[in-house]
Every structure is written in C-alpha cells, then in structure tokens.
Length: 385
Ligand SMILES: [Zn+2]
Image 1 (cartoon, rainbow, N blue to C red):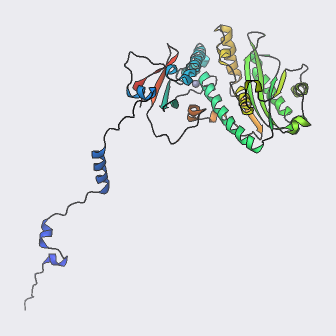
Image 2: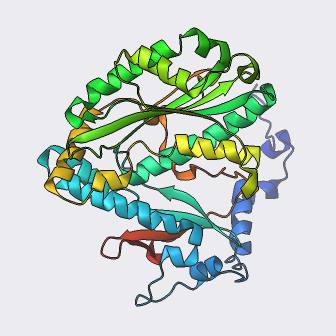
Image 3: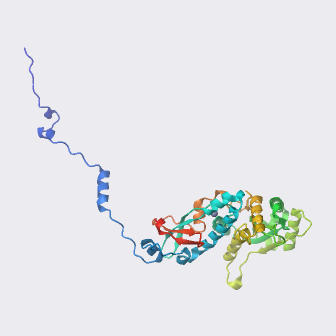
C-alpha cells in the first residue's frame, strides 16, 4: 500500500499567513539612530550670547589684522605678565650668550608664549599657558611663588582654626657676604646651622612650626660677591611672649653660636602684627609676611644686572652653584605646607593664585601671544577657540 502523503501548509505550522511570507519584515530603526537623526535635525548654531562686555566683543568680533590690542589694555590685572615675561626674555638672552646655558635660553624662549583665557563679564581667567620650568626663569619663579602663597594662605586658615591663640614671628638670618664661587658651600653651612638652631632649647620651647626660604642678592661689596640669607616665619605658642621670650640680641647670639663664627651676624626678628595706622588687619599683616617670605629666591634685577660681562659672570656662577639646591623648607606643624617645586604641575602654575571653578561650562578662549619686539602680550584671535 502506497504511503499516504499529506501536504501540509507549512505556514500554518508557524501560525503565519501566506501573505506574511511575501512581505519582508521591516528592519526596526535602532534607538541610537533615531536619536542621532533627531539631534541632527534639531541642531542649529547656538545663538551667541549678547555682547555685554569687551571680552565677549573681542571673541565675537575679532579685530582685523591691522588692529593690535594689548593684553594690558583689556585687563589691567594681567598687565604684570608683560613685566615678568620681559624679565624672562632678558634672562634668557643672558643664558643665550653662554654655550653652557644655551639649552636654558631655548627653553625660556618658549616659555609662556601664549596665554589662553576663559572670560566672564568682568574679568579674564587664565586657562592654559606653556611654562619652561627653568629654575631662574622669572615667569616660572613668579608663578611658583604665587602657587606657594595660595597654598600657604590656606595652611594659615587651618592653623588659625587649630591654634587660634598662637602668634607669628618673622625672622631674617644672614651671614657675612661670600664670593659667589663659595655660595654652595656657604648655603650648605647655613642649612646645617639651621638644623642646629631648631634643636636649641629656647627655640624648641616656643616654636611649634616654621617655613623658611633662601634668598640670594648681589653683594654690595664687590662684583663677585653674594648675600645669601634666610627668611623664616615662625609659629609660636602664646607663652613665647610671657615666659619663653627670645630677644633680638639672643636670636643673634644663638645664630652666631650655631654658625660657629666669631663675628655677630645680622639677625632681625619681629612679631607679625597689624599696622593699625594704615588700617591693616591681623590677617593682612600675616599674609604680607607670607608674601615677603615666598616672593622669589633671586630677584630678576640681580639676574639681569647692568648687562656687563661681570654681571653675567655672577649670574652664570650663581646658576652653577645653586643647581638642584632646595630653597624652601618647613618643619614642625607646618612640615607639609609646601609641594616641592619639581612636583608642581603645569596646571598648578596656570591657576597658581586662583581657585579653578569646575562648574564653568564655557570653553571658549581668548588667546594672547607674547610679541618680542614689543615686549608685550597681544591679542591673537586666530588662535582663539
Ligand atoms: Zn619659564
């Protein structure tokens, strides 16, 4: 008996109607594609904000090539950049005359050549810049010092909270001027002497914390002489003024003793207090002392001098002598007050003295570049973003 063959409608197995087979299924549009297509059709050029200030105007209506606008003319607080950058230019030139320091000259030539600013209604805020980080570059030294100052102001606020009745002293310690070729040895000796000083009983009884910077100026007693000295801020217990007081002459004797010298070194100690005559607050007085302590290690005018060969030789020798020496130190409860200079990041040199507000969404930038022939920063809108 032949097998019975049943013809089955295969569509019925899948519960499909025959016409479904003939019509291809539409491929669903992926969600991301929909979103993308929609955003394309909705997107239009953002309406520029109304021009209500000079910065907005400069950004939206950049001047033509033949109109030059200086940074100092649109932002007086930023006019200091011209001075510091001109110092860098001159110090860089001095390095450039000596093959030994040519590399520094090259790096300094490329220091802070552009400044990219964010802007608000009333001011500019530095958002990007390039720094060379050569130790004696005046711009880099200035930015580092600003960074340390702002660090120290916040340390000061903490200290005020923890030790509200403690007081600050400002101490200057000097030694006899030395020949610049003896500078390294002299500084080493001063450092060792300082280590002995902080272990002296009168010091330990009164002082709970200190910050110390090294400054070197040109000696007035000859073209090869140097005047190294320490600026120190001391945080002392309230009892320092009642029963642990150290007079200026005693500070002098202590410093002489730890230096192990037979002359009396020049020492100056004063309590940091408000100058009421000029309406200064205690906080301003302390911030003033912080500024004085952290200003610079070698002043640019001493690096530059009168441009004579002797002046240049002094600066070259100073550069060799202080290579890799640290000029900032702290101890006691202020031990961690400072980040070492080689750990300071480019961003920290940019923001330096200003807090960076993270909420700022506007990423447009006004760019100024340093024009060597003018010794000024000029508006360079073709670099704007
Ligand atoms: Zn620099």
